[in-house]
Length: 270
Image (cartoon, rainbow, N blue to C red; front, side, top):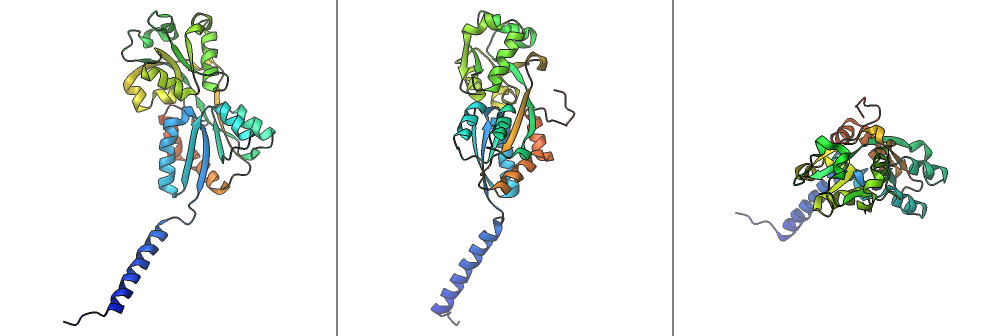
C-alpha cells in the first residue's frame, strides 16, 4: 500500500482546520452585536427568560443590569453607558427625553405592573382571607417594601397602605429594600414576616413555592405604568431596536404576560 507524503498530510490537516474555522464563523449571525440594558428589578425573572430567548433567536448578546428605576435614572444622567432603560415608572424615561438624554420617538409603555401582599407558607396568617389587614396581626413584626424614595413599587406600596388607612399603624414595622427584588428577598429569606412586592416576582417559581399572596386592587395606588426608552449615544442602536421589536412580538408578550404584567393593548384585565 502506498504511503501518503508528509506534505500531503500537512495540506490535508490545514484544509480541515480551514473548513472547521469557516463552519464556526458562518454559524455566527453576521449581525451579531451587543445591547446594554438597565432594567427595573421587578423584571428580574421575566427579563432573564426574555433575554435568553432573544439571544437564542438572534445571536446577539445582552448585558442586563437590574436595580431600582430611580438609581438608574441618576446613573444615566451622569453618563452611564446603557443602550436601553426599562423603568418601573414611565416618568423617569419622560424626564430623560426632556433633558436630551434619550430618543423621544422610542418611548413607549411596555407594561403595567401590579403589587401583592406576600407571606411565607409557614405564616399562621391567612392572607387570602384577610388581605392587607393581615399586616395588623401580632405575628408580623417586619414588613418589607422597596424604598419609596427611588423605587416605584415602594411608592405604590405606601400609597396602598395610606389608601386603606393602615400606613400610620404599620409604618414603624416597615423595612426597606434597595429595590423590589431585595424587598422580596427579605421576606422570602425570613428577614421580614410579610412583604408588598411585585406580582411578577410572586409568580416566579421560587416565590410561588415558598409562599402565598393576595393581589392588591389596582385602585389602591397610582398605576404602575412602566416605560422604556432608547438612550442617545447607544453603541449599537440597531440591536437595541431589535430587542424592543422582540419584546413587542408574540414571544416577548407571552413571557411578560406569564409573569403577571398587563401588556398595553392586549385587552387583559388589569
